[in-house]
Image (tube, rainbow, N blue to C red; front, side, top):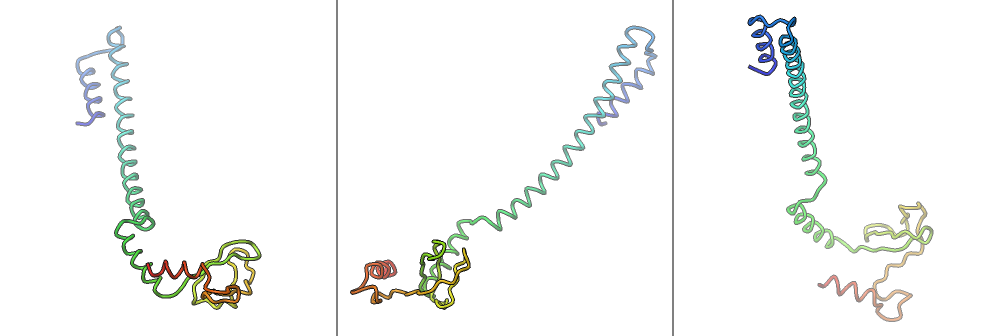
Length: 155
């Protein structure tokens, strides 16, 4: 028996016992039974709403779990990314330069044609790019930047 049924049972029991609301005690009992009935209805409505909210929260939790799976990196994913990064480093060299128009740092690899390089920030074509191999026009001898870069690659 749920709470609403129990409230109805009490009201029926009081009517069966002949409690009438003409006496002082009868008025109090009658009002208490009405109050109990109202409270039972409200509690049942709250239980229903709570159940619906619980189901909704479970759905949100499942959706959030999927989002976390899609966007957050786990330790296993980090290991795979490290392996991929090592493979990518073997594919070619990466360079960076500062855009003369907007000052944004541009990163690119040796697969791009330096004659067609466009700054992604401002859209201006970047010209006069020299990739230093350690013996460029600006360097009289092997430049320090080239030596540091090759030392890091060997490590």
